[in-house]
Amino acid sequence: MLSTARHLLEVKGYDLWSISPNATVFDALRMMADKGVGALLVMEGDRMVGILSERDYARKVILVGKTSHDTLVKEIMSSTVYTIHPEQTVEEAMEIMTNRHIRHVPVVDGEDVLGMISIGDVVKNIIFRQRQTIKKLTS
Image (cartoon, rainbow, N blue to C red):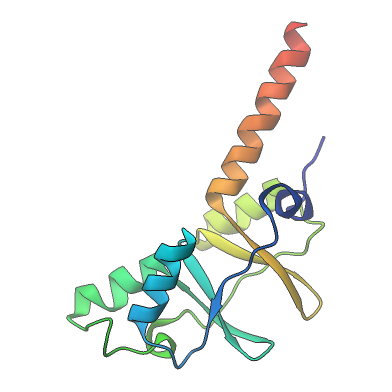
């Protein structure tokens, strides 16, 4: 039984949090904390222009002596965004995340961003499926 990115979104929900490239990093961090997420999509209108993660903040603000109040999202966001299609498997998502050293990946169908999955979502799904397999094998 293969799970897809679409299946993960159906389980976790399609909530998608985004911020403008012209917002301050402080505002982005506040939104991440309020929403309990580790990354935000950076959007100009309906167009995805980047992604901002806690890792970007740690490496591109704190470690170089900048402040979150004086730094704009566009200065530290990752402009290259690796995405997956909703029908790609959880294993394919994990492979992309592992190979690219990223923890969040938007699920995109054409121009439409459907949601975002994290490495935590992927691991939870794999553990759940392994438990189901073990149950079947032991009964």
